[in-house]
Every structure is written in structure tokens, then in C-alpha cells.
Amino acid sequence: MAGAPTNHGGRITQRDIARRAGVSQTTVSLVLTNNSEAASRIAPATRERVLQVIRETGYVADPLARSLLRQHNQILGIFTYELVFPAGSADFYHPFLQGIEACAESLGCDLLLFTSAPVTDGARRIFHENNRLRLADGCVLLGRETPREELTRLVREGHAFVSVGRRDDVDIDGTAPGRVPCVGADYAGATSELARRAVALGHRRIAYAGSGEGVESAVDRLGGLRAVVPDVLHERSAGRDPADLLAALLAAGVTAVFCELPADAVALHGAALACGLRVPEDLSLVGLGEEDGPGRLEPALTCLRIPRREMGWQAVEVLVDVLHGTSDDHQRLLPCAMVPGQTLGPRQI
Image: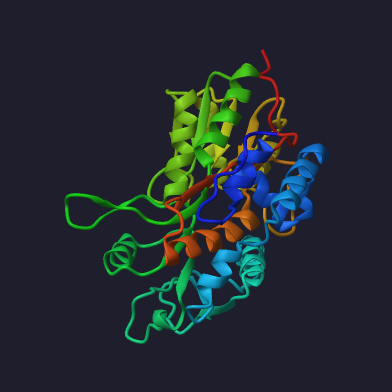
């Protein structure tokens, strides 16, 4: 095993467990969440090594955090920028909420879902005339995109919060950036890894289908692909007919398409079949996320699995640290798992 853990005034942290076990902090979190899907990605010997360190150190779910939280209301808020209960979004948000709930339970905290903010054009805003943020000790933010002006105000006014999803720092006073506490997925690293696989399979003309801008997750995906394939063809997919998009890609000689949204990969797959093309023999497709809900692609889509439950769990951990200043580790990126699927294959000569 690696060296003994660092002792933070008597507190043993997940980072200490990771150092002693010789694994990443994410691996420790995966073991603690006891998620069967996540556990399947950890070698039994590694899992047992982590559990052995936990037993040796007497680690429980952050006993100092428990005692510190007793100084507060022991209520943690959840604010969602989009509706999380409609059928179309339930599958996407459910694992995040599972992780948040499990970690809050381990700390003896209650959760408060903020729903009083009106929904306008499909989105909520956290600052409105009836906002009740102060009812909770701190708040976890959920949403595919968070308005910059709201993040700036949250940081400027000193609210205790954590965003689920990587967020860029904000400009507070024009001199020093305001760091946004967040737990995100490492889309850039995972996309680069998939890109290297595609290049190794002989693909030289690779395209990115999606916005590639705006929300950080989109910027990270395109940036990760460009780090490996600098001359990637960027085609925006929003509002385009899949057949027209496919025609543009084929005219440019593209043999592999990285789709920001798995739904675009599914749509392109249907358009390719309609044209008599084979996937992946004639065109490889990669989804930079995972399919949600029924109607999964056949053959199985080559894609990324987002560590959503682990992100929710660690968001609560970071929120506790924000509340009590017990760590400066307020921005974390968790690795995405690769789903091999059957839609990325060798380039045909």
C-alpha cells in the first residue's frame, strides 16, 4: 500500500484513503457509493484494498462533517434549472439525485428541493422575488446549462453552493477570477481517448456534430477532439435534417463522426441505413454521452458513460467543504467510462 494518510486535525478524508490504497479518489467514492454498475468497473482486488484501508482507518462518511453540520440546519438544497420529473428528463437526472441523496443520508442531512421559482421557456432562475435559498445551509445546482450572471451573483454574495457539471470561473471585480465550486465529468479527456482510438483504426477525416460552444460540456468535448485531430470538421447539427447533415459529411470525405449528443448519432445512423450505408463499415459513429430511455440503438452505440451518481455524491462532499472550509478541493473532474459498443470500426480502404 502507499504511504500513510495525511491527518487533517484528526480527520481522515477520501483523499487520504485513496493515497494509502494507491488508487484515485474517484475509485474510493465508487466503492463507498456501493453502486453495482460502478462497482463492476473496479477490479475485485482493488475494491478489497480500498475496503481494507477503510477498515484500518475506521473511516465513516466524514465524521467531522457530521459534527460540523450539526451547527447548521442540516438541510441541503437542490435547485434544478430544468424540470427533472417529466419523462423525457427523468432518466438523465435520476442517477445524480441518487448520489446526492445517498451522500446526504450518510451525513444525516435532509434535502430540500427548491420548486417555487417559476419556469420560463423551460428553465428556472434561482434569483427571483420569492427565492428561499437561505432555508438551506447550502445548495447543489443541477442543470445542463447555468446562467453566467447567476453563478457570478452566487459567488459574489458568498452563497454556499456546488454545481453538478464543470463550470468556468466567473469575473467578480475584473481583477481576480471567482472560482465556481463544481463536480464535473472529464469530457475533454474521454473524448481525446476515443479520438486516439479512431485514429488508430485508420480514420483521418473525422467530424464533430454539435454546437461545440456555449455550455462547458460542449466546449470540452470539441476541445478534446481537436487536441488529437486539429483539423476536425465541425458541423452544427441543431435543426438540421439528418439526411442533409449526412450528405455534407460524406461530401467532405468523413469516415467517423463524433456526436455531441447521442441522439444525433442515432439520427445519423437511421439516415445512413436509409442510404444503404453500413455502420461502422462505411461510417463510424461515436456518441459523446450515453443514450437515455427506451429505443436504444442497435448495434450498440460506441459512447461515453457519465459518472452521474458519483458526481451527485461528490457534489455533496464538496458542498460540506465549502460550508466549513475543511478543504480547498472545490473543483473536481471525474473520469468517464468508455462503452465500446459496435459503431466505431476500422476505416475501410
